[in-house]
Amino acid sequence: MNDFVQLSLAASVCTVLGALPALLFKHVSHRGKDILLAYAAGIMVAASTYGLIPSALRLSNLYVLTAGILLGTLMLTVLELYIPHSDPDHSLSNSKGQDPSSNGGPYSLLLMAMVLHNLPEGLSTGVSLASGDSDLGWLVTIAIGLQNVPEGFLVALFLITQGTSRKLALVYSVLIASTEWLASGVGYLFAARLNFLIPYGLAFAGGAMLYVVYKELIPESHGDGNEIPATIAFIIGTITMIGLTTLLG
Image (tube, rainbow, N blue to C red; front, side, top):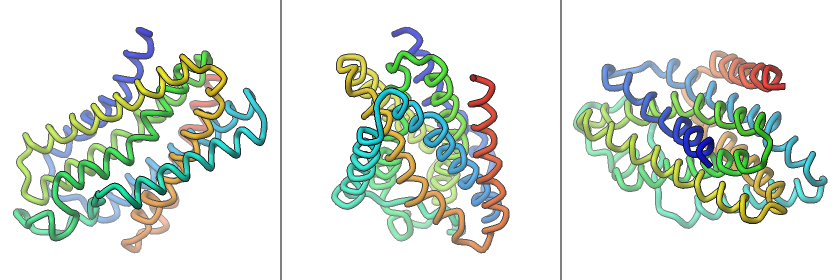
């Protein structure tokens, strides 16, 4: 349990660590933003396809894996459709002081969007740490931590460019990190108490993460004419996680 608390907290805190450098910036180019998003997407894809999904298949079978992935996809689809939220416009082109409700939604809706995005990340951390596979737990925790850094940076930078104070932007980052940590706790307790559902949980988290990548990160990273550098960043992010998977054995 102590390992879970420390590792899951470390992964969540990376959101705040990523937000800290954003406090020093007023602007990041479209290309820089797209590269960060694509790199995070590559990490998440590799964490799913080289960590969560193979582990779920090893512990169960193709039918369980398919059911879990589809359930994860379905849950994110339902949440996206029925929970009010507004994704941030990562173009970062608005003038300082503009009302965020005009291009990215009220702060409460932005916070809800980030909660939806971080839900599968937290669940995947918790379930992987409860699986009893220490290598998988470390791998997923590192993956989530790595992708939380650019995510935290971009969200904080978006808020600052919309006229939010640096102090309030940091507070929002802490709230987003806290929701992910709570989600990891739910995933851990759920998997620890119902061990037979761990394969479903791993596949569920993998499917949910792939949904976020394809629904949000890839379209956003390819919307400003920077497809080639974004694609290269995606591949580098994927290679980073494959390398970590190999090192953890």
